[in-house]
Every structure is written in structure tokens, then in C-alpha cells.
Length: 282
Image 1 (tube, rainbow, N blue to C red):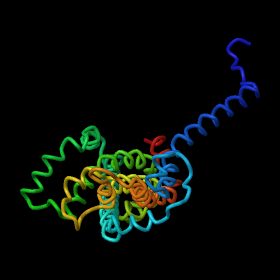
Image 2: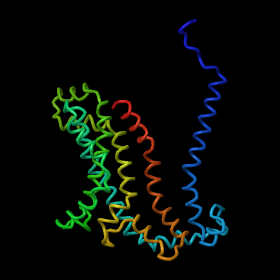
Image 3: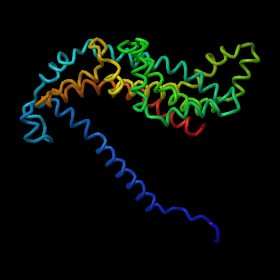
Image 4: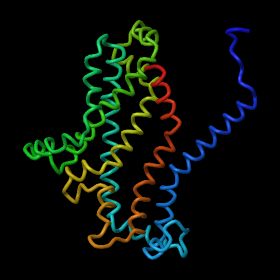
């Protein structure tokens, strides 16, 4: 019949499913291979790495992992990275939840939203030097608060972008019913909106944590004091001038990657929910 939509045959559906899984499998191998290779290399010495970099460790060199904790001053550098990342996440969640709610529910225009999104179009690397000179003038270089404020400024636009899209999906009727029942706007926001926005908050928090934890350039320029050195900077300094212990370097990468991998695994379900919800509702 003319205009009738032909249904896909079972054979074609099966072929499409097989092709999908083949593509996803290949993509997974490509993505996971560097991570697996770094973990393997962390248990090798330079001789094994140069002779056959892709072979399994034979024999394994577990001393790399014990030595790297001393080499990177793990206690201090890990604490610095954790303080910077956790503080940035908390501040970003407070600010962007309010700015996202304002852009989605409390204003009809898009001026503020557009202004914030413009921040995503400007690479942070282009303004690091002016910010650094300003920090030096006001005495905020080599300070924890200076670094945290820098990280907050770099992530506000991203957080607002994600949460604005998510907040648009919060029903107006829920907010209005809370206000009618006597709740103030602030109380309705914290008691009604925030619980419904947990997936979006988890998404922003996870990405901001990973962005801050993995940062190298900002810490490299802004934190020249050894006491403020992050784990990322400490791992970078494991390299030698004329030669490097690549097994030790790989062990440092393992130490650096492990917390980020754990955080993503723990929050991956909420991140996926937040991204899909924001994409559909925004």
C-alpha cells in the first residue's frame, strides 16, 4: 500500500544489533587499552618497557608502587588535590544550582544565561597570564583560596549550562504548591527543587571534581610553593632531565587515576541520568 511504512525484517534488526555491539566493543577496547597499558607498565622496569612495551610484566616490579608514594610526597600532595577538588565542587554546586534555577524559572530573558555560556567559549588558557599578574598584585598567588577561586571561575559556566537545562524540567506546579503552603522562595528551592535536581547536581559535581583533580596547567602556573603542590604536579616532576624511570612514572599515573576512576564509577548512574535528563528537558 502506498505510504505504508515497511517494518524492518528480523534479519536486518539482528544485523544492526550485531553491528552496534561490534562498534561499541571496538570503541571500548580503544578507550580501555591506554589505561590497561599504564597499569601493566607500572609493574615493569625500564629494561622490560624498552624491550617489549606491550608484554605482561615478567617479572613484576611491585616496588614501583611503594616508591612512588614517597617520591610524590603522597600525604601532602593528595590532601592538596582533595582540598582543591572538594572545595571547588561544594562552591560550584551552591552557585550554579541557584544560577541555573534563576535562568530556568525566575527570568524570562536569556541575557544572564547567554552571558554565562559565553564563558564556555573562552579557553581558560587565554586568560591565565592576566589573572596571574592580578593575583601577584593582590597577593593571592600561592594561596589555597586563590587556586580555589580560579577553579570555581573556570567551572561556573559549565555548571550553569547543565543545571539550567535540568531545572527547566522541574514542574512549576510543585514550586507553586510549596509557596501556596507558606514556604518562602528560598525554602521551596532547598526543600523542593534541590531534591528533584540530585541527578543534575551529581553530574555537575562529578565533572567538576574530575576537571579540578586532573588539572595541571592552572596549578603549574599559580602554585609554585611546594606546600601547595598537587598530586598531578608531583607526578609530572617524576620525570628526569636526561633519563626517566618510566615504570615509576606509570605508577604515579596509576596513583593519580585511581581516585578519579573510583569517583566516576560511584556516580556514573547519576551522571548518566543527569546528562540525559538535561538533554531532554533543556
